[in-house]
Image (cartoon, rainbow, N blue to C red):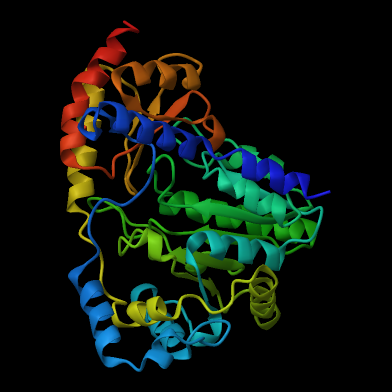
Length: 393
């Protein structure tokens, strides 16, 4: 008999993907310009020109065997050194190539990290709302996922979290800026969270790891600052992806940074390497590693996202929706005007609005709106949003 767990995962796609595929069918039926698809977090701005130039230069000037051949398992040493130097420069945090493991994006970083840390029966805590695949990643590593509900403003509710941490807690996943809310954990909350984890480590005599999932770190607006967690908590692993910072989601390139302050750092990094080996995540795409080395300081221009955010947020508030104001990423979390967010999303389809119910994110009663779309899509969708809310007044 084949794995029933994997069969179940294969037969049922995520809610996000189901809505996206529905959108594909509607686009074929009535035209793409008539469908307002806010389901998928797929960057809509181009990669920086520097990325294209780096790719062309590598293709034209690098020996093909070297360019397309295997690197060492954890990644090319020069690339890892460049990333480590950038971490030192940007965050004042000690880092060397020996702390960096190159991966196929943030999903690989998370699955490798969890498999490196977790033993069967351990618990992994996530702060809701959270990316739904965390459950798949944690359970596949042998852990039980524990969901910590948020405050009303979507910040971490530490009083609740305090009660959920047990001697079985192995790790906590923090995603800031957050998918699906766009919220950023403020420094005061981060300090309090890290203080709590240190108290719990002492109380239980265990090691509790903080896994920082950071694909949206560079996508923040105004004067918002994102605390760099290794500077606040020793037992930290950072899972980073260039999918959003360089607008390269399909290229699948990122890294794990194991803080030098992690207890038994050498063994933890070795476990990361072992997990990468066991999962088949060795030698991340060679050419993309070299592109990152050449573009370490490049960033995608997020002005279009900020314009979309302001346009959509202001209009929805004016129409009477309750919305969590996003400080980063490219998502907006909207309170459903009825208790059943799924029913609300179904009603939205009548106006060709494709929205994602928040239930699978651990945010029942809310809806995720991904605004990394063309500005024209947002402008053209506004009358539909207005008509939709009027049904509830």
